Image (cartoon, rainbow, N blue to C red; front, side, top):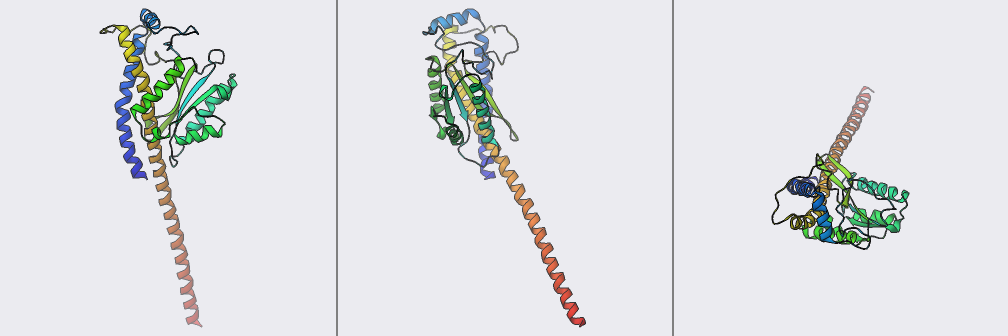
Length: 288
């Protein structure tokens, strides 16, 4: 199992190493462009406003891990990423703990469980959410084992439609971030509204030369950023799962070797004691 997990980990590492820098750069470019107030106003005007007075896709900046308040959002969507199977150490338990911690904070702020839409990517998360009394808004077990861009894009479109139609006021992602083979950190991150400025160093707009025009570029770039974000998170969680399983199997192998050594030592001691006892019996009999 360790060999299989290691092989999958190498493949997953290669995938996330290629996608994560690209996703971050796209997000950085979009955030830099939308610091321009004139472009922001023009884009909001182009998208149009709904009956609540907000743009169909709110392009406001929020803290990456800020939670909504009941006064500003009637409903919240949580997308949590786990694995389908066990034997991966504390990977699933850490995600479930982060999910329950987030739910607890929302409930303490005035939300009820019926106000929270849960999208579970992975069987372990789905089981935990159902155990906690949630009716799942979506169950994506197959996507946890086989990350696919088309599936991730479909989920992203569903979340964007739910947000832009005002069905939910905020979409939150909960997943494990792959730091290294020995470190996977549970992360809570806002998906919508976008945390556009989080990754930039200063507050000045970035002066890009854009063709054909800024509105067209942003309208093309925005869906790509949103879809790629879900796919990148899916790859990140997948790499974390295989890293956790590799470590768990390594620890299990080491424990098995230690146990074999202890049992071998105990067997040899018992065998030596038995031989010593037999020799003493023989010597005692010959003396008589």
